[in-house]
Each structure stands twice: as C-alpha cells, then as structure tokens.
Image (cartoon, rainbow, N blue to C red; front, side, top):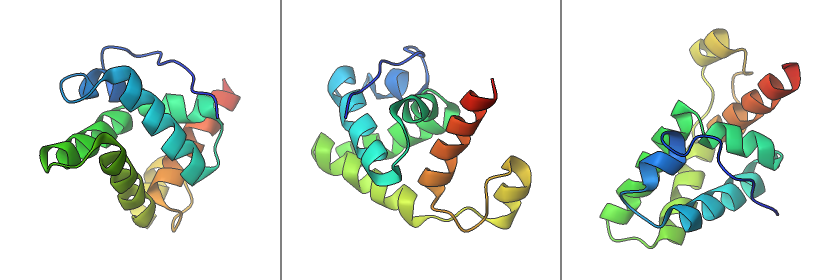
Length: 118
C-alpha cells in the first residue's frame, strides 16, 4: 500500500504525533494499519488522519508510547481499539454514518464519501 502525504502538517495526526515519535514513520505506519483494517483507499485514510479525529487517533498512539509500547504496537493497539468501538445511534444521527459500524471504518469511509461529494 502506498502512503499519501499529509495535507495538514501542523495539526491532525501528523502535527500531534511530532512530539512523540518520528512523524514520517508514524504517518506511514498509521496509514498502512488503518488502510489494512478498514479497506478504505489511501486518500480517505489521509483525510481522516488530517482531521480532528486524526488528532485524537494520534493521542491514542501517544498514550501507548507513554506506556512503553513500540510505535508499531501502539499503532496496532489504537487501530484495534477504534475498530472495536461501534458507531452509536447518536453519532449516526449527527454524521449520517450508519450505526453499528466499527468506529474507525465509519469515520474513514465518511471522509471518503465527503471527498467524493466535492
């Protein structure tokens, strides 16, 4: 899988992870792990990581690093956690993402749909 570069180097995942890990390594690892887990295209994963949700995902990875995990383990743990959460009815009403989907899949697909609508 080919990683696409960030469009938001100051914020989102890329800007948030800078104080915790090598940005390029963390970006490529997150892109690959999320794309593998969700099956969504790289541009949708990039848009997710560039968003506020990407900042929260970076915080989750950073928490794993603080706990002594390697970058790879922290990233995979964050992906697993976000895939384990489900889109609630309230989130579905607010975003249009179908309830019951894995949270990560739902939000990455949401960014894919938004990009296609532009």
